[in-house]
Length: 321
Ligand SMILES: Cc1ncc(C[n+]2csc(CCOP(=O)(O)OP(=O)(O)O)c2C)c(N)n1
Ligand SMILES: [Mg+2]
Image (cartoon, rainbow, N blue to C red; front, side):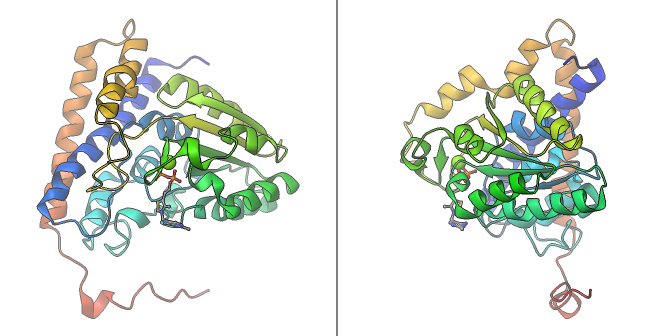
């Protein structure tokens, strides 16, 4: 699958935006101005970017508690996300959702989701809608290695096969569920193999390699779009930060993250693979533009008003059907 220079630059911009967004939040969080937990996605950028590059606004994704990368790759507004994380009224969910509940239905972003194993069962609902209404839309369910052990995930995979739904289950194997190693918690140590046992096509890829993810996701999404049912993709890429911001990470070897950054940084690998077509100066310019965009988003968020209790406390609580 060959990509144009424009597509390559867009993919890099998305990955670099995710990285800088997360690194900025890592610093901002120490100010105490962000309420609630933050789960950073740095290190896994190539997964969200490689998958969502095949999707449009009519397609849906279900996400996780580690959802910023999915939101950015699906086209959510950076200012709206930052304001949401800072709890401001200008946020994508009016400042009432925060990091773990960012949603934007206009972009097909069904929501970050604090319920481990929540996305697969939610996503099959969206996929069933698409199949019933014959919209041609595809749904992607993102979940972690930990979530791959949940009963809800098994039920959703079985139902997707039985109903031949247009869905792709992406399992991001980042090595840990909180502080528990995947090697301990996943009995077979083979998430893709377990998905295949439900009767769907399943593949395992290096999640730090944008091109491997993009290729495998493209095949799976095309399969769903042409009506040939569900697939699963296990993408292996470890996170650079703790489970949550503040996690002392005593379960990791002190040198593990430094070694990952040195050997398998998805952005560095991407730059190396495309060096003959795109020079470092062009990438550096994109990095600078993103830094300014994120700086502006943080300033806007800090200066924006909080929700007004008298108007906003009871709104969005009940839905009129
Ligand atoms: C149903 C449920 N059980 C437990 C938790 C607590 N919890 C939050 S994140 C997490 C680990 C999830 O691991 P994984 O699915 O691998 O995602 P990762 O954090 O690695 O991205 C757990 C157990 C929860 N939020 N929901
Ligand atoms: Mg995990």
